[in-house]
Each structure stands twice: as structure tokens, then as C-alpha cells.
Image 1 (tube, rainbow, N blue to C red):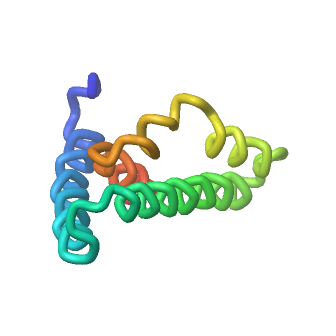
Image 2: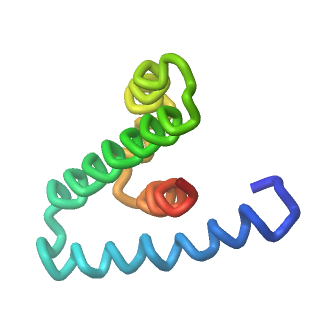
Length: 97
């Protein structure tokens, strides 16, 4: 992150242990089977997209559903869903919302 203040960096540093904690829980649930990890990433991505949509609705932004859909379907989000190790991005966004 480029921001040099404590705000964003602090939240990001707190979300990394949360991501690793979910890895430990999932390792206990389905060992090294990658399908379970990918399903959890997909569910977290859907939850984050719904949080974006809900936040925009609360801010009375017109077309909030469209912005939420673009957030959910934009190709830049592929890494966070497809790569198991990008869990820290989900937990960061989830804690930021």
C-alpha cells in the first residue's frame, strides 16, 4: 500500500492473521483438497459484493445494483477468487466495509 499513514496499513496488518486463521480452520475441515478453499473464496467474494451493494444503497447512490454487479464480475477480481492465497484481500475488504 502506498498510503503512509496508520489507517489503511493498520487494517491490512490486522486482516492478514484473520486470513491465516481461516486457512488453519479450512485445513482442519478438508485437509489439502483445493475445492473447499475455492468454494470459500467464492462465498467470501459474493459476501463482499453484497456488502458493496448494501453500502451504496445506504449512501443512496443511483444504480447501486449495477455498481455491485460490476464489482462482482470485473476481471480484476479474478485473482482474489481463483488464487487460494489471496484470502487476505477478502478479509481486508470484509473488515474495511
